[in-house]
Length: 370
Image 1: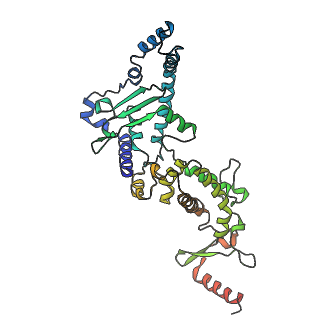
Image 2: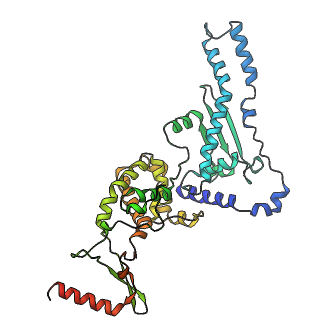
Image 3: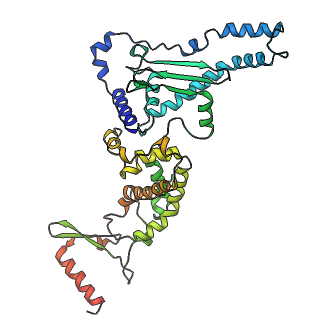
């Protein structure tokens, strides 16, 4: 099922992003019917039922002596239109999550198809074999049912059926029908300013890092005499430069409590943690482009399944925490501790590489009385 979700979600995404349909002469020549008449069909005949209930109550011809059942049925009919509006509104909002740039294609692809139907996307009309029906249930809830070509798997119907009380309870619990992928880039940029690693002047009043932000000197390695312990890098042509060396263990110890708090927040809504894992964390690299086809296809084997892996077991939570830290260190913090030039002007100059290496060797001999 995972591969079906990935494949179909990516196909639909490509279809919706493409302009090819505008040049399809066959499609342009045929009419497309998007008039599903969802509410009209659902409420067909209800006016007659409403009138019959009113007459039964008025004439005291109810099935029970106090007309309890009839009054309840009448109440359900009176409340039904607003319930339908709320139900369809919630549904459209939730299905809209399938259109976000960082949507996790491991979500049930039928939500993406349903969104295309509700938004009259090309290729998802009644003329194309799709249909959506709303039913008023005797218990006062409502059910919507999506059918059509992409709701068949290997010739077996696999319709999408959603009950109004189910989606209501999901939303009230703080979850989503379609998993929302957290904006990891936004969260990690914010985390950079919270880990207490940067010099005060590096964090602006708006909470963002200054363009010239630098890690505090307390995390820079120094020699016993207090001077900076530089690493020499070869810049070619026999020349070299000094770059700062950082105490990575100290940096990780300082950042870990902040990262752990962020992870705990993500894991409090597990379906979002799964989405973050599938789209970003499991890949280990930042996803900058909108087109995620190659990334998602290649990472299918490492993806977590919403129906099988929720609730998350402890081993997966620990793995998420470990990989989240690695992701933060490699994709966000690494740039501030790699090839950083000295703050001491004299030490930042380009020098002869051979002479520098010889001087460093001589210093080692002198310091150790060799």
